[in-house]
Amino acid sequence: MLEHGNRTWHGFRLMAVLALVAGLAACSPRPPGVEVHDPYEETNRAWFETNVAVDRAILGDSGEPSDSPVRDLVGNFGSNLSIPGTVVNNLLQARPDRAIENTLRFAINSTIGLAGLFDPAGQIGLHDQRSDFGETLHVWGVNEGAFVMLPFLGPSTERDAAGMVVDAFLDPLGHLLPGREYGGTVAARLAARLADRAEYGDLIDANVMASADPYVQGRLLFLQMRRYNLGDENEEEFIDPYADFED
Image 1: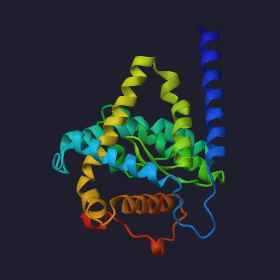
Image 2: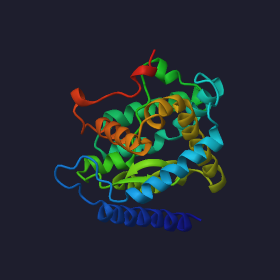
Image 3: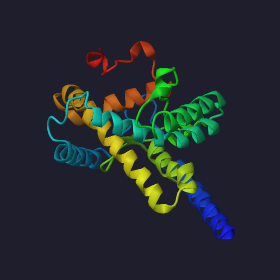
Image 4: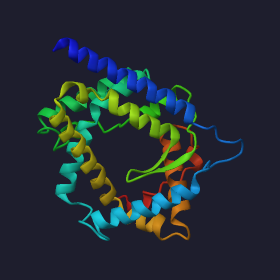
């Protein structure tokens, strides 16, 4: 049994490395002076329309109130399950302080917070600081590549898309939990992602869908926010699309 587990672990690591190599090879550099590198625009636009239709079909045009307690519980639970993967990326980014803080957050919310349904860690100043392998690649100096619209997952970049694949193999829960239980955690995180999209439905409608070209506006806002979160966007030039929705 132990030998089989070791073979499985080595297989996961090999697949992660291959995915990383493929991702690095696919990240085409942004041409000088070009803010938005979108060589796949025709395909991206088609998937944008499909994603909007899927969101409308699942979430409806209005959805629940933005302060829905059910949505908050789902979001908290799914977010808590993503913390172990964030800790791994914190360590790969040589940020031990963030790794320690996120580990404490996971421990508190998984116990006192009833498996992450509630967020007592946030009440004492241990706030949600998500990270992923796309950010790890950024720290390592990998360029973002072209903009891509992922089927059902939404806007991304070549670097972040490659990072998603690696994250799936580096997730500690995937190596600690049996297949069925781990599948449940993946479903919970997808549900939390849907809850996030539902929560910001009004924001998307106001800032993206109401614009002259929703695809271009959504692409611009995504790239601006992603670069800002990674420290690539000038703070003076950053426009917060959430500002009008803050209390």
